[in-house]
Length: 534
Ligand code: TNX
Image (cartoon, rainbow, N blue to C red; front, side, top):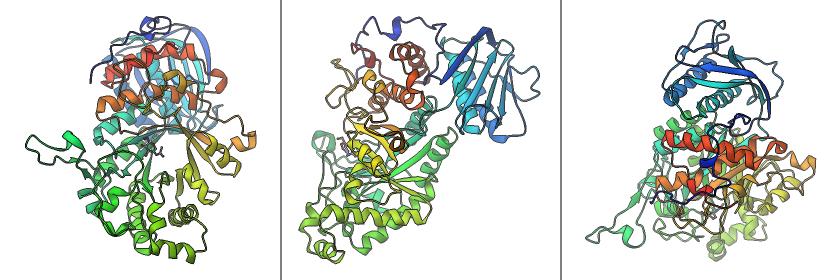
């Protein structure tokens, strides 16, 4: 891939913005409340960090902060010792004003900085804020941070990114680098799209063929053949150990991983591995091309046993509350054409295939609920009359979100095209390949999470928002990263910052140090985001 070469528009370019605008707190997402103070705090190699009380997690977070300071500024503050004389203090304090586990207060005076939070998650976010302040000038060694008092808490509980690793696989290390960038922007939910027609990417011990067969495809055209014309499979999957490692890495950064096993459509790779799971008895290849496919899971008991066994292993690996069961784009042809499926439909007294899908999803939902989990699914699940406690991820615009919230379902907004990061982000000629129309950094920033049609009561069902990266067009790591950031930074601000504090021009100023931080981290955020004339 060519490096971005587009010339940023003068009036908005972070490259032309002052390195650090003194009046702006250089933090993304913008904190809920900032009170400026006189003077500056200097942090240098002599700085020491103290942790109040005997809290192992607070100490881990303090050490993590010290390590990040070391990576960016080249000195590691010592962690330990008395509060007196410490440059930075971490304290769990249930009495701070802002509510919630993710809230924190960061009080910076010329004498020192104190991060207080009700829970470790808040300490972690306070540390991220202080680290951003300490790295805004992009320099090494001593740093001066403007004295100020920050009170901060997120607007929404679900601040998410989805990555599709079925169309194009990314290694565990690549996924971790993404999760790290999420955490540094206070995004807290990583939705991992693990199965699809083009690949099954999660090892399931009871069904090894899912990854042996379903983890590989022969790409269409030249990409799928070597020089001698021999098939060149495209493969990739995560072992369970790798998944546990990623989940732990995410947890240490207060990111919850939501796995998705897509049902009953997007099932071609599973059916290629175990044809009995399908309706026709035929064996398809793992799909080499994109688009909506026709291969559906069967509705017989054998298929449910398989899916329940798969979900058992999935729930063992992912301790979070939500399991995503897909539900999108299940073309019903195969069900319509199968006498056995039609007999089942009549036996259940269901009038059409959408009701049958509702029954299918409902059965699996009950299963995971019996294990204390909750189902989330794409907005098609609404058409199957799901039970009230199903959470809806609205992707076909925002109508699904409105309908879901009115019907009493919790909802996450992830609408196409606004939050679909597979769309181009500029019209620069060397832009990442992607879908039209252009979804610019600004269009993500201007996304309204709560649809205006909802009453205040209904709006309480809005858990938050998420941006999705489908990877049909994102073949390489560089493309994936450029499609994600910096637009994910805009999403972070939209989901964290109080609506009244959102300010596009101020955000653009804060993007300058943010872009420098990606470069330092070796993460390919897209400069072309700024090539658009906003
Ligand atoms: C629709 S959005 C899909 C994905 C595709 C995406 C882009 C959704 C729930 N399903 O399977 O990747 O369009 O082509």
